[in-house]
Amino acid sequence: MKDFIKQILQSNFKKDFEAIYDSSPMIQYLDSKMGAISGNTKTRKSLANIYAIYSLAHFYAQKFYNKREEYKKFAGFPYMTLFEFCRSQYGGEKLQNHGLNNRVNFEFANKTNDQTPPIIIENGKYLLNIKYLYVGKIDISKAILEIIEKYIDLLKAKDNALVADLEELRGISSIADKKRKLESFLKDDAEARIFEIIAFAVLKNHYKNTKVYFGYTKKDLEEHYLTLYKTGRTNANDGGIDFVMRPLGRFFQVTEVDNYSKYLLDIDKVLHFPITFVVKTNKPAKVINKEIADFINAKHGGMKVIKDRIIQAIEEIITINELKDWLADMNESDTNILINDIEFYYKMEMNLL
Image (cartoon, rainbow, N blue to C red; front, side, top):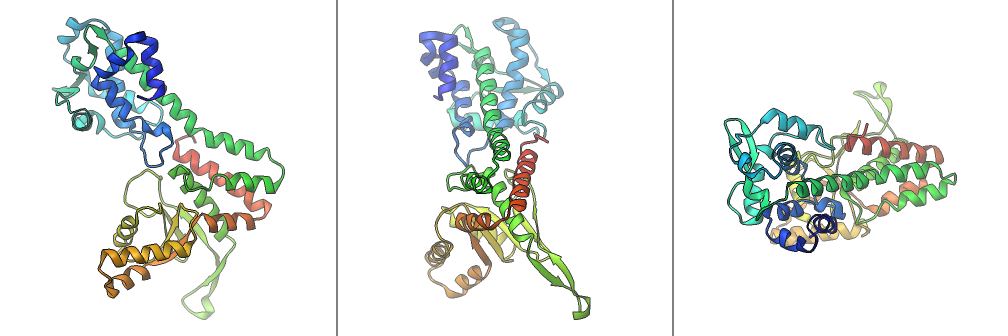
């Protein structure tokens, strides 16, 4: 049980809080979905499912709190009322309808081993099964609402922590101190989306001073500076490539060090077009290259033709070490631009613009 859930249950149910938790599959389910506040870099916020429950519990508590028999006769709330409520919540602007339309029911059964669907859908209307709104004779809906609202408050604080850090950075006059603060964000246990945004800002400002010449003939050669583009949100889960460089057409993928199978999937999805991997690790790039080669050998029985094809598709390995070196080399102007880039892309990520 997470600490904030324990505190809410103690406040509402005193010495009976553990019994309430143990007897409530709904509270247990919500507990299991709220790992994003713990700092686990791979944990998603689960807002679609949580807000589906929140919308139903919100309207229930307004009309039917402690009115068990009256609620049993209720036909449900209109879909659009619920969906608009979900979309109006923090981080809910782009939510799809999956949470309300059976995703919660399927996952709830898997996580709780309770096969009664928590969301009842009938003739385009929705309501929570009364089984999950009561423990014995106690209506727990207000505690459910408190738990969800506290989770959102904690998420907001976490999401805005980087913005506060950037404001602190702007108040630092020494460029060396600014760089030390920025370096502190580049660590192997950094949250995935923060690492990706900061890595992008470092790469963008590192490459922008590199000049190349392009043209169809020698006479047509034109001067270009390398420009890096971020292709989407960090949690889009769209199978895309993270960054693209113009005019060279380089692909960049941000990844973890502990899953080399994903590297191969990333290579396959672009049909072995060369990829530069930006790896969230303090290991030297040459170590990562060797580990990848060893992984490929083990996976494919040492077949040279397969190993060569995959290795040739890895254009470069960039680790935290290179990012820190390039940050250290930046002048004051580029460092300040980098800070602005981090703020812009983070606020865009978090829908704070």
